[in-house]
Length: 271
Image 1: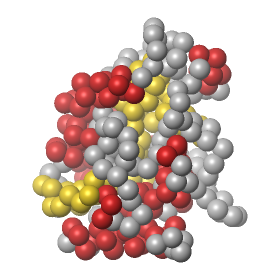
Image 2 (image 1 turned 180 degrees about the vertical axis):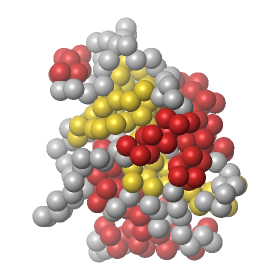
Image 3 (image 1 turned 90 degrees about the vertical axis):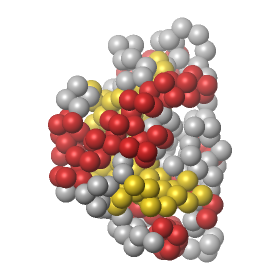
């Protein structure tokens, strides 16, 4: 496995998924971040659910709140959705290629539309924990890229305006924000939060940007959604904790799952 290039590894993983699910090709993929994991229950019929470690290059996430599985879902209109609940975060120390392996596997499985979800802290005190928000652009502060060598990819419309319009047709009140990815796993200091807001960002997290870049390289159309799990350090009262993220996600699951399912259904209809 370790002698394979990232592209070859993704192709191997896609073959594993096809074999284990009986589905040769998927149309849409969605990576489920904190607070979004129950969305799969609202999408359609689950054809198969696979433990992550059974698929080449995947591992069970050590992060509480992630399912650690890959699921194949058939929607009522016949669309095949690959649900990735086994995200590898950059801070786990496996490298950038492992961090974007789920996205590259989705592309190798035939996916044309990649939906990335996450939980994020807000550097804007006006935003409310528990709200869902569309990502309209990002600032990659990891000092890393999934691209290697002279691979020049345009990111002008990375988070597809067309797909955001589709999402707004389902949920007109969805706000939009600039997402910033840092490496983590520590949270930011209050002074860092002030700096981040000065850079033009609205929300901050530890995933998604690197995955979105890899998705664009693979030719996929990208839609990003965040759950506001907390206000950032220095804005909210008291200390930050992962338990707070989990609690906010759990409280929002009943709303987020159906919302994401409606958005995916609309995306499917717009293809």
